[in-house]
Image (cartoon, rainbow, N blue to C red):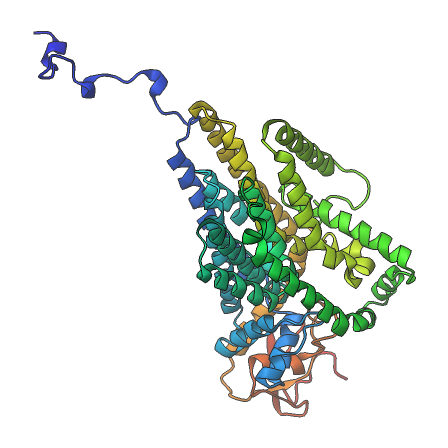
Length: 540
């Protein structure tokens, strides 16, 4: 009997289990399945969420505004503290986070970063849900992974007082967009309640929340183009009501804050310790005529959009590897070529691709208007343009536009072979993007002197030494000799010496230069023991 006959089934045909599959059907690395791409995306997402949390804890700490906010909290009543503005911001939610952090775990930076990461995890969750409305298959976790591995997350969270505005705002913005899209699909009063609460909550953290209704309208329109305007008011009345509330908020804010903003800016400049820096910033102030103000605001707006486009590519980073404000560089040429190619291909192959590009320009442009029109934009625009922390709060919106773009691309690729090639290209792009962001982050933090990451490295070392040495003191009310704090902890003169800083860690501490046994905080943050017959360094 032949071998084939020995493997015959009961119906006389060979068993499929013993037949070799054709070579063309065998899986290959260049033909990744949707499941493999999803696993890669989820692995990247989880690794980078943990990586950036660890990075912020290991490379930053409380300084300047953070410390000043804690000091104000200790010397104010709860409601008074909650309703006190932070510089130009009226943000009770920001104050509440400060109160929670210090009340639960005083001066514990790990706990403070944990609060921020809760919002970051919530943002990732709702962003994933929003991408799910687009039915883009493995593109859903891929775009989430791109969001989580961008180093803009590190720049957005590295400064705790700054991140207290942005991280909750991003989370609540995504909540409002999500519940609006759910309401468009299935209705329900519950969705309207949640999106309204998300909008009001976001206003408590950041004034840019006035644009959340615009975000809702833009993504609702682009996701439901066919029937969004039939009937019109039935689908747009919730964001229109919120836009009316935003207009009222803006009017009230300008009436109560605008008259004081120029004076506040001059006072802020005046507190800088370096005379040359004060003179330089004072020289940037416009003469006051409307034409110059408008020109500076327009220049700042264009600059913010340019820097946003550069920062999200992973081809530039804050510091030495940044693109120039004026002129060209190799990085800027590469970034421009990338966007021109992408825009041309989108206009050619993607159905109604011009709508996506126009919508992205309108949303991003509107979001930067408050900053461009403010004193920071007209006076310090050329300085703050290159601070990447301002672009973290736009990243989630660009990722949603990326999901909408992918939805239209897949609609034009019905063949399985084309989708397989797209999965391979997307996987390789994710790996390259993640590698670029890690390399840029390392350079900005270790090699670049012009990056905020390198600035916070000195802050972290000082505070780590101080926190460790203070924890080893056994006395309930140790006595200290006053000393100055480093310049990077008191840029605007908020925390001038250790008489202000040490009681934040040890509330029972006292300061007495004549005490027989006392302690002194050195310039690197270490606490040294002094005795009467051992004068402090530098004393006569």
